[in-house]
Amino acid sequence: MRPRLDRLEQVVCWSEVLTDAARDRVAAAYGVPVLDTYGCGECIFLGTGCPTHRGSHVNADWAALEVVDSANRPVPDGETGDKALVTNLANFVLPLIRYEVGDRLTMATQPCACGSRLPRIERIGGRAADVFRIATATGERPLSAYPFQHAFEHLRDVREWQAVQVGRS
Image 1 (tube, rainbow, N blue to C red):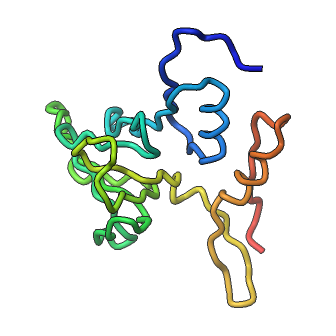
Image 2 (cartoon, rainbow, N blue to C red):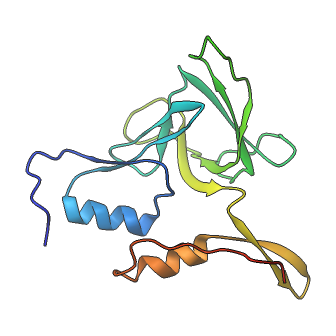
Protein backbone atom coordinates (compact mmCIF):
# COMPACT_ATOMS: atom_id res chain seq x y z
CA MET A 1 0.00 0.00 0.00
CA ARG A 2 1.40 3.40 -1.00
CA PRO A 3 1.73 5.92 1.85
CA ARG A 4 -0.51 9.00 1.55
CA LEU A 5 1.76 12.01 1.35
CA ASP A 6 -0.06 14.08 -1.23
CA ARG A 7 2.32 17.04 -1.21
CA LEU A 8 5.57 15.06 -1.11
CA GLU A 9 7.83 16.25 -3.94
CA GLN A 10 11.01 14.28 -3.34
CA VAL A 11 12.80 11.94 -0.94
CA VAL A 12 16.34 12.89 0.05
CA CYS A 13 18.69 10.18 1.27
CA TRP A 14 21.72 11.05 3.34
CA SER A 15 24.46 9.28 5.28
CA GLU A 16 24.29 5.66 4.08
CA VAL A 17 24.95 4.03 0.72
CA LEU A 18 21.80 4.14 -1.39
CA THR A 19 21.70 0.94 -3.42
CA ASP A 20 19.91 0.79 -6.77
CA ALA A 21 17.35 -1.65 -5.38
CA ALA A 22 16.60 0.56 -2.37
CA ARG A 23 16.29 3.63 -4.60
CA ASP A 24 13.86 1.81 -6.89
CA ARG A 25 11.72 0.62 -3.96
CA VAL A 26 11.54 4.10 -2.41
CA ALA A 27 10.71 5.71 -5.77
CA ALA A 28 7.97 3.12 -6.41
CA ALA A 29 6.54 3.53 -2.89
CA TYR A 30 6.33 7.33 -2.95
CA GLY A 31 6.14 8.10 -6.67
CA VAL A 32 8.64 10.99 -6.42
CA PRO A 33 12.31 11.49 -7.31
CA VAL A 34 14.84 10.01 -4.86
CA LEU A 35 17.89 12.22 -4.36
CA ASP A 36 21.20 10.80 -3.13
CA THR A 37 22.78 13.74 -1.30
CA TYR A 38 26.48 13.49 -0.51
CA GLY A 39 28.47 15.19 2.22
CA CYS A 40 30.72 14.66 5.19
CA GLY A 41 31.07 16.34 8.57
CA GLU A 42 33.80 18.59 7.21
CA CYS A 43 31.75 19.65 4.18
CA ILE A 44 28.05 18.85 4.58
CA PHE A 45 27.08 20.51 1.29
CA LEU A 46 29.54 18.60 -0.91
CA GLY A 47 27.00 17.13 -3.32
CA THR A 48 23.34 17.60 -4.13
CA GLY A 49 21.31 14.65 -5.38
CA CYS A 50 20.09 14.83 -8.97
CA PRO A 51 16.28 14.80 -9.24
CA THR A 52 16.34 13.09 -12.65
CA HIS A 53 19.37 10.74 -12.58
CA ARG A 54 21.25 8.58 -10.13
CA GLY A 55 24.18 10.18 -8.38
CA SER A 56 24.99 13.53 -6.87
CA HIS A 57 26.14 16.81 -8.40
CA VAL A 58 29.27 18.22 -6.74
CA ASN A 59 28.73 21.76 -5.48
CA ALA A 60 31.98 22.78 -7.18
CA ASP A 61 31.51 26.44 -6.36
CA TRP A 62 31.71 25.56 -2.65
CA ALA A 63 34.07 22.58 -2.59
CA ALA A 64 36.72 20.79 -4.61
CA LEU A 65 36.43 17.01 -4.77
CA GLU A 66 39.24 14.78 -6.02
CA VAL A 67 38.75 11.03 -6.46
CA VAL A 68 42.13 9.33 -6.03
CA ASP A 69 43.80 5.94 -5.62
CA SER A 70 45.61 4.78 -2.46
CA ALA A 71 48.70 6.85 -3.42
CA ASN A 72 46.62 10.05 -3.91
CA ARG A 73 46.88 9.86 -7.71
CA PRO A 74 43.74 10.96 -9.60
CA VAL A 75 41.65 8.16 -11.05
CA PRO A 76 39.91 8.63 -14.41
CA ASP A 77 36.20 9.40 -14.49
CA GLY A 78 34.24 6.16 -14.60
CA GLU A 79 36.75 4.36 -12.35
CA THR A 80 36.16 3.88 -8.62
CA GLY A 81 38.73 5.55 -6.40
CA ASP A 82 40.14 4.31 -3.11
CA LYS A 83 39.36 7.58 -1.34
CA ALA A 84 38.42 11.19 -1.90
CA LEU A 85 40.22 14.44 -1.12
CA VAL A 86 37.97 17.34 -0.17
CA THR A 87 38.78 21.05 -0.09
CA ASN A 88 36.04 23.12 1.56
CA LEU A 89 36.11 26.50 -0.20
CA ALA A 90 33.56 28.06 2.16
CA ASN A 91 35.22 27.37 5.51
CA PHE A 92 37.18 30.52 6.36
CA VAL A 93 37.67 29.67 10.05
CA LEU A 94 39.43 26.32 9.62
CA PRO A 95 40.38 25.73 5.98
CA LEU A 96 40.58 22.06 5.05
CA ILE A 97 42.70 21.51 1.97
CA ARG A 98 42.74 18.07 0.35
CA TYR A 99 41.21 16.55 3.48
CA GLU A 100 41.17 12.76 3.12
CA VAL A 101 37.78 11.08 3.24
CA GLY A 102 37.74 7.30 2.95
CA ASP A 103 34.78 7.19 0.56
CA ARG A 104 34.90 5.11 -2.61
CA LEU A 105 33.43 7.29 -5.36
CA THR A 106 33.01 6.99 -9.11
CA MET A 107 32.69 10.20 -11.13
CA ALA A 108 30.46 10.21 -14.22
CA THR A 109 32.14 10.09 -17.63
CA GLN A 110 29.47 12.15 -19.40
CA PRO A 111 27.61 15.37 -18.54
CA CYS A 112 24.34 14.76 -16.77
CA ALA A 113 21.28 14.69 -19.01
CA CYS A 114 19.42 16.87 -16.47
CA GLY A 115 21.33 19.86 -17.84
CA SER A 116 23.45 20.64 -14.78
CA ARG A 117 27.00 21.59 -15.68
CA LEU A 118 28.32 20.59 -12.28
CA PRO A 119 30.46 17.43 -12.05
CA ARG A 120 28.42 14.37 -11.09
CA ILE A 121 29.29 11.55 -8.75
CA GLU A 122 27.86 8.54 -10.55
CA ARG A 123 28.17 6.11 -7.66
CA ILE A 124 28.82 6.49 -3.96
CA GLY A 125 30.27 3.16 -2.89
CA GLY A 126 30.74 3.73 0.82
CA ARG A 127 33.78 3.87 3.02
CA ALA A 128 36.97 2.16 1.88
CA ALA A 129 37.38 0.88 5.44
CA ASP A 130 34.03 -0.93 5.20
CA VAL A 131 35.60 -4.10 3.83
CA PHE A 132 36.30 -7.55 5.15
CA ARG A 133 39.58 -9.38 4.66
CA ILE A 134 39.07 -12.94 3.44
CA ALA A 135 41.45 -15.78 2.67
CA THR A 136 41.48 -17.13 -0.89
CA ALA A 137 43.62 -19.70 -2.70
CA THR A 138 45.85 -16.86 -3.92
CA GLY A 139 46.09 -15.03 -0.59
CA GLU A 140 44.12 -12.54 1.42
CA ARG A 141 41.87 -10.09 -0.42
CA PRO A 142 39.31 -7.42 0.43
CA LEU A 143 35.59 -8.14 0.24
CA SER A 144 33.21 -5.17 0.16
CA ALA A 145 29.92 -5.07 2.02
CA TYR A 146 28.03 -5.31 -1.30
CA PRO A 147 27.26 -9.08 -1.07
CA PHE A 148 25.62 -8.49 2.31
CA GLN A 149 23.70 -5.43 1.08
CA HIS A 150 22.48 -7.35 -1.96
CA ALA A 151 21.40 -10.38 0.10
CA PHE A 152 19.45 -8.36 2.66
CA GLU A 153 17.68 -6.13 0.12
CA HIS A 154 15.42 -9.04 -0.79
CA LEU A 155 14.43 -9.82 2.80
CA ARG A 156 11.60 -7.35 3.42
CA ASP A 157 11.38 -8.10 7.15
CA VAL A 158 15.03 -7.13 7.77
CA ARG A 159 15.13 -3.45 8.75
CA GLU A 160 18.69 -3.26 10.08
CA TRP A 161 21.67 -5.56 9.91
CA GLN A 162 25.29 -5.56 10.95
CA ALA A 163 28.18 -7.71 9.76
CA VAL A 164 31.24 -7.95 11.98
CA GLN A 165 34.58 -9.53 11.18
CA VAL A 166 35.86 -11.01 14.43
CA GLY A 167 39.17 -12.25 13.08
CA ARG A 168 41.07 -12.92 9.93
CA SER A 169 41.01 -16.41 8.50
